Amino acid sequence: MDSKPVTDWTTDYDILDPDYVADPYPVWDDLRGQCPIAHSDRWGGSWLPTKYSDVQRIAQDHAHFSSIDVGVLSFTDEERPPPPIDIPLHPIDADQPVHTWTRRLLLPWFSHTRVEQYEPYTRELCNRLIDGFIESGSADAAGDYARQIPVRVISLIIGVPEDMADTFTGWVQDVLEFAHDEARVARGRDALIAYLLGLLAERRANPGDDLMSDLLHAEVDGEPVADLIVMGIVALTIIAGVDTTWSSIGSAMLHLATHPDDAQRLLDEPEIMPLAIEELLRAYSPVTMARITVEDIEVAGCPMKAGDKVLMNFPGANRDPEMFEHPDDVILDRAQNRHVAFGAGIHRCAGSNLARMELRVAVEEWIKRIPSFRLADNAEVTWAGGQVRGPRQVPVVF
Image (cartoon, rainbow, N blue to C red; front, side, top):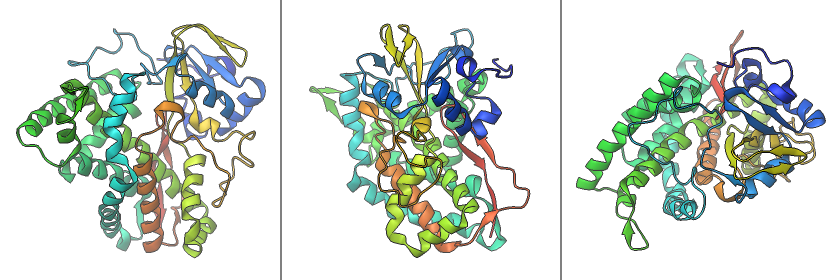
């Protein structure tokens, strides 16, 4: 499906083109100069803004751009059969007012105070992972390290054993990384739904100090939260909390492996770490979301029709030279950095505090234990793209 080569990126872009997935920055640069909002009929059809101002305008305009379908690829019912149970992934796929109260249920679990409680576990986890390969002198910084961290932290939040981590990761990959493969999406989606049904019954019988138990005891306007919404919020926490942060940590490790001076600077100047984390998030933003036009509207001269899909190209916006000086350079102490790695508007990422903490701790513990490392000779760095872009294989030696 949609496999023919791209000849004109302004009218026929392909977000799953292997070269684009590996290095989209030149494409975005060209589009900003000649067609800042491109269009393509591939993958169900969509618009692709590349300028910060356009992405911000659309993200803030929830009256004209709905979040009822945030997936970047579209399929017919024949191509992708419906799930056995239709679980809404609120708040990410909801408009107001449902978005408001479902987000309010989720936010306390990702507040600064709550995230501080997860940090000791995250540090211990990072060191445990490093213990597993440090003596060998080599590792896959993406697969052996970045991939392992966020899914285990999410397991902690929803109160399930660490040994569920690989299973969760597999389901998330099926749903996001292989979103173009209908069979894999159905497999991962249906397995996740079945698991959540069992977890719901178990938590109702034996509540604990975890996200699902909390949601099962929550009330909105004096009424309990519907089971499907409880399941959806937990499913969203798993889906949105794993691949995104895995990709951010992996990108950071790849950057430091290929920019040893930056790794050394972080060791010598630990006080710049907060700025460095924001800069790494800006430069290697992993997430693209979608919006659906509510009615006919024109954006930057592009006439969009009601029902059109618009890809919220947050990674492209973060490389816009009109907003960021030297946008393709990673400047660890960049002071002016209003990036949109976590989105913008009412749908800004609810888990941003957690993602920042995981990225910071992952970098801190790695460079503390392995201060000098580089890509292995003839290393093949592989990338996943689409909804979430990030390195899947980063072989390093130290």
